[in-house]
Length: 95
Image (cartoon, rainbow, N blue to C red; front, top):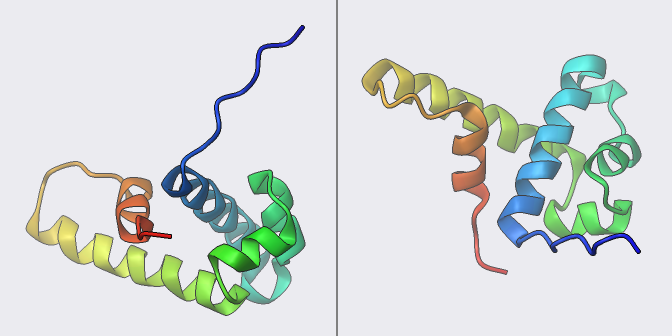
C-alpha cells in the first residue's frame, strides 16, 4: 500500500497555483498561457482554479502586483523574503 498524502492547506494550494501560473505565464505569456495548463501543472481541476481565482486576468494581475510589491520591498528591506513567500502571504486569505 502507498501511504496517503497529507492534504494541502488552502494557502499551500494557492501557493502551488501561483507558482504554476508564474511558470506558465513566463513560458507562454499572458495570452498564451491557458488556465487548463495552469491547473494541470498545479495538480488541481480547472473549476477549482476558478474557485481560487475568478479569471486568468485576475491571476496574472495578482502575480504582477506581488512582483511590484516585492521589488518595492526589496529596495527598503533586506530580509531575504522570496517572491514566492510574498505571494503566499498576500494570498493567505480566509475561505
